[in-house]
Length: 117
Length: 110
Image (cartoon, rainbow over all chains, first blue to last red; front, top):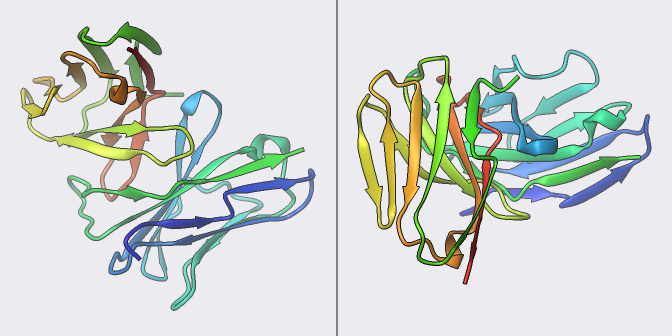
């Protein structure tokens, strides 16, 4: 597709339940990123992929969070045993090119709002 | 902790007025990006500034990158209601790892 597609748009979970979010990057983009936007608009980098390989996972919480990008499937971000502080909007972005220097344009999806009650 | 400080946090102006948003950091970045985000949507890239002292213009928007590549500003001339949105600066940590500021909410009233 020509835009990053994220589903679901909204997700409500009780504390301790599992949450799974999906992202279809723009066709032809090899790089996928997950960012978390919490209160006060703070964006936090979580993880990036080059095709199906984890590229940088330094922002991922060690426990409960996992992500995958498998061939011919949407990428996914899964949170086991959700906590109240996981409530946020989770954005997926994709990019065609990536270098150690200047990052090329990241195209963001509309986000998935997770509310943990 | 935000490495990038944006100011002001909120700006409300009348149509036709000018405004400036600032983005300051104690760190040097290889480049800095400015995004605009509207409610219910993801951020959309406006511009990337790379060279210290660089000035880029995008219609009524003027972006500057400081000589030391630590700070940047966004100036909007003759603001219009369509300029309303959350403006975010993001320092490029390389390899797509962006460090965002907390954003400046701009409201332009007719």
